[in-house]
Length: 198
Image 1 (tube, helix red, strand yellow):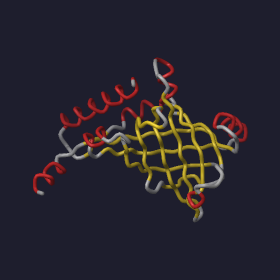
Image 2 (tube, rainbow, N blue to C red):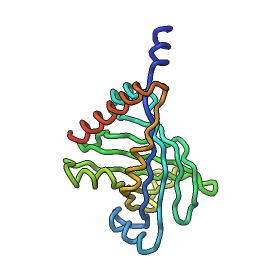
Image 3 (tube, helix red, strand yellow):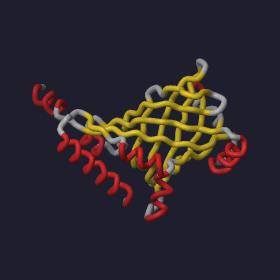
Image 4 (cartoon, one colour):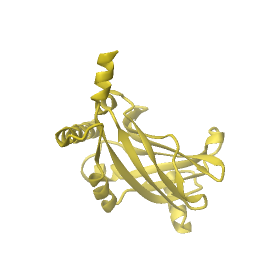
């Protein structure tokens, strides 16, 4: 018991933030709905911070789950809605394909919604890797009616400035030792690079 507590106390990791912006609307697929939403000005944006308090366990977990908190802004629903129980799965597999999955539940006027999305990695190389890692295909649904229709679809992107801010947002979890933090950063970057390759 004591040994387990010591191991838990030594767990370290990191956190970082991300911001995506795009458009949502009704539509049969995300891309056409994005174009409809863009023409109508139905903007969508979210700011989230992903926490990985135990980097070793995170990498060992095939779902690579990061607890997430943040805010959502959607035209017609609200300008600053706080997420509740959000999470992101970084580089997990679905139907044999590599994905980054986002689940962002939030409350608006007493109703619970879920903004869910995925980044689709398909043999990412060069500019294709950049596009795939900065493009999120999203859907909006009511949480009380998970089997019901999708309310809106669309696409959100990360711009170059947001990528730079994301890179600068890395902070330590569970340690104040800068050497340990740098080691965790390198380990996370190595993990991400490996997952993108295969």
